[in-house]
Length: 198
Ligand code: HEC
Image 1: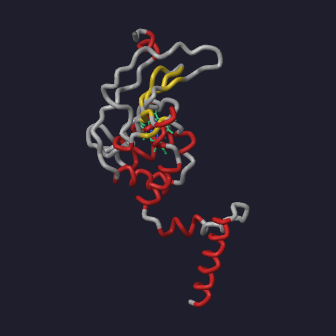
Image 2: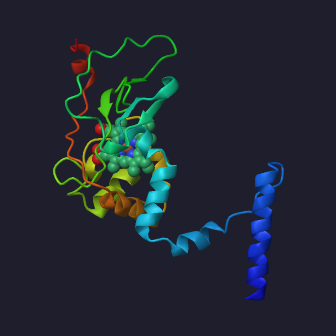
Image 3: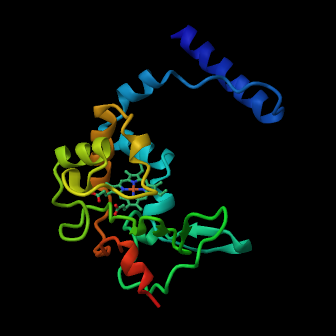
């Protein structure tokens, strides 16, 4: 007891020192294994989602102050907004190979146009009917709904496939726990159809 109180005093002292002088090293956090052991799958999933950039593509962004876009958290992880009118993508030349909308939810490149999926648990338009197994296979194998066509860029499944099974399950558990938002994301537009856009 006495030792642990001394330890916490020492840690508090170090934190204070760190706050006063940024050159003082901040004491290390407890090892991840200790933290993970006390997190529920939903908490662990939230941590992974919030540190893996899902929001950058799956939440629609809008223009904020100083020309800096910001995520519209009222539509958290609900994917490309249905009914958003898109004109023909810009002609990409030279070093430019891909472009995105101001929402960061529609992406064009040699693959056509991909639209970020609704990751909320809405039954009809989100991942409400997905099983854990479908989610694991989608992330591991890069297959739409875990079984069909290839998942298109820029979805970084080839990065996320390196998660452990427990991590993928935790992400799925978290996504199932967030508010469901009804938003029907369009199917990808293949290149010949992009060419016909106005
Ligand atoms: C750089 C942008 C980007 C990031 C970051 C991103 N995604 Fe995606 N994601 C996409 C796009 C685009 C699609 C749609 C691809 C398609 O239709 O083939 C997609 C599709 C998906 C799908 C649906 C796959 C299917 O069956 O069609 C899931 C699930 C998914 N993303 C989960 C995630 C999770 C979880 C994260 C964060 C850990 C994440 N994504 C981060 C762009 C992104």
